[in-house]
Amino acid sequence: MKITDLAVYNRLREWFEKQGYTEGVKDNMPIYCWDNVSYTPSGITPGHYVYAIEYSKLKLCDVPYNFRTREFFLHTLSGAYEELVDYVKAHIEDFDKQFFKDHIATEYYSLEFELNDFEYMPLEYIDEEMVACAMFRAINMRYAERRGDCDDWFYSVYRRKPEVLTQDLYILGARCFAEKRGGVNKFLEVTPKEYRTPEYYFALCLRNSTRVMEDIPDEILTTNFLITLINESVENIRSFSEKALEMEAEMQGRGKVKFWQAAIINDGYSIRDIPLNEERINFFLSLYTKDTPQYEYGFKSHYKAYLREKNGDEKPRNTTNELAGMMALMGAMSGMPNDEAIDQSTEFLKGSTNRKTHLPIYYANAVPEKYSKVYDKEEYLLEIYNKLGIQVEGEADYFYYDVVIPNNLSVSMFEGDYVIKDEAGNILIRYYDRGPFYDRAVNVTEINVTL
Image 1 (tube, rainbow, N blue to C red):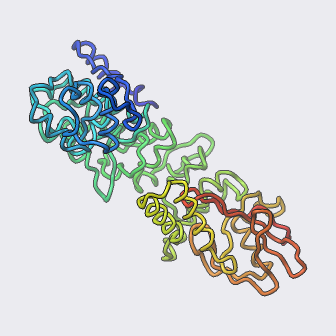
Image 2 (image 1 turned 180 degrees about the vertical axis):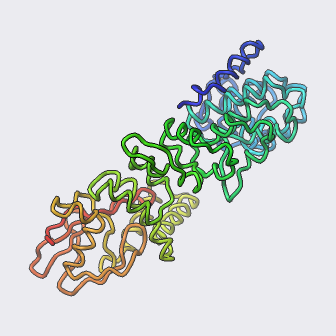
Image 3 (image 1 turned 90 degrees about the horizontal axis):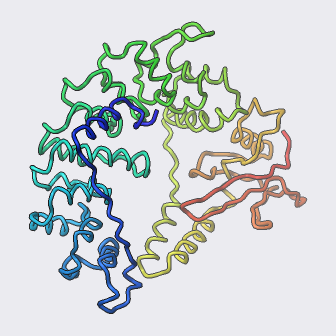
């Protein structure tokens, strides 16, 4: 369900229009690259100075007063540039309420950072119209522009003028901003208790990737409440508490099932959003075999992480990748062209992999049909290594195992890839190690051995 389809969103829209309120107007002044400016007075525009500020080529003190136009500030004012905020605060008489409405419409940074617009605009500007404009913009930013959450402004209003935050704004905020991080749901904590209605809690759980349901009162978590959530989208299982996951409901053709079971039955990929235990693992495997995409893309990595945690194993670090990234950054900071810095670090990355003691973890192709329900891709590759007498000692990083290769095998380059050969020169396994450090891919692509 889109947020714009929620009853609360439509209520707010209807109320906004009924009050005769209007949103700000987005300014479309052209922004020009400062580096290409003609160094004559007639060739410079406020748009050039906007670019220069945004890319730290100039500071506000370098911008002539005649270029500090309303449009200039609509595009540059941001909590990321404290000197600009200080200037506006010192000359607030030049920035009326309409300016801030237009700023919200023009620049999404107006709602972000500790120094967002609502942190310093005059209190008389902060009213129901202004906060509704901010909510509509925040929703658009998240769901249309894909810029993520934008909640700093809400907390600024909560601190400075909480009385303008209506119940509908809190419900929409629950849908957009609420998350449980480090055991704390900051948004829930600031929500007045009288606004915590079933509608609010329902919005809180919609498409929420954190376990917000852990803080919802038991009387809200009825069977119908949970069924409605799952029917809206099986993705809502992400927000379920452990207690809710274990609750039961009738499912047509299945009788009583637990909610985690219902999610897996309806969508096998949902297993990645459900904490694992032996019962849940066995139930999933009773429905989806190792050759299914649900197993490959929903279960496998989740199960691997579960085993690692269960056995107390540390997740391997991609140390060489991290070092390559640092080398690229240092090269770029020293003046080296970006492409050259990346190429240099990538060469280091490939050269630092010891082909005599490291072999790939991943297999790119399908497991032969004879074994497809017995082994997944990585299990099959491990069996092949074992068949060849290659001893796997553990994961070196995300891409490679630490291995001991027997003397009768060798690793070498062949047609741009790497190959494992026997003493007769036969290619037994072929794999590639491609891409720069930030987009590396290592996969076995050819196996000429049978189990």
